[in-house]
Image (cartoon, rainbow, N blue to C red; front, side, top):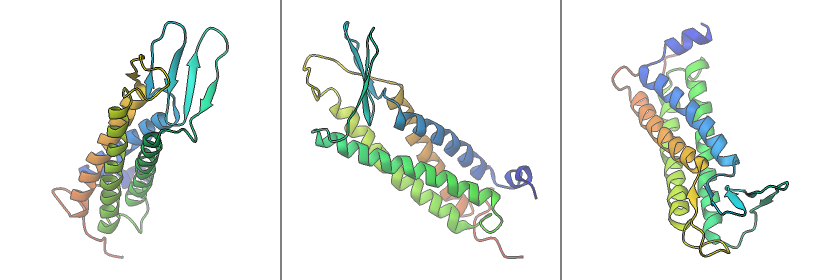
Amino acid sequence: MGVVDDFKGTSIFCKVAFILLLIATLFTCISYTTTDWVYNDKVVINNHYGLWRICGEAEVPTACLPIDGWANDWYGVVQAFVTFGFFGILISFFLVVLYIFVGKCQKNGEVAIAVAIICIATGVFYLIGIIIFGAKVNDKWVEDAVTDYKFGYSFALSIIAFLLEIVAGVLMLVEGKGGVGGGGGTKPLA
């Protein structure tokens, strides 16, 4: 069987979970590495804050500074929880690829359940990181107490990635339990 035949042979739940995790992987890679979780619109200098760097936007050449070792404890907590979510999406996508395309893993209910557990558990971690970041960002956390920070595209992509991860986890749970149209169970050895 070829790759196309393997994909066609899976249930609709697995196909949708695969597509959702593919999109979530793309979105989480972008949001995890870019510097637009929040930004400010100051007249003189605009700053863009990511999970790992702060970048300035000015007429002269700008620079980015690492955020490692920042004194805000909650920022480190956000970094940790979002990192768990990031790796959860990557591992889940890898396992779904195994579930669809590798003969020994095809229609193996244990793999599907493992994907579901990873997606849901790390999705909760991702959610916690997003909530903490969203709650603390305008809590005057930077040196300037009058700047109002706005959420950027990186923050939005992380929310979308988290939601896609949770939905994919639920779909793989149904798949693993042998739900409607699902392969479920363990594929008998030939």
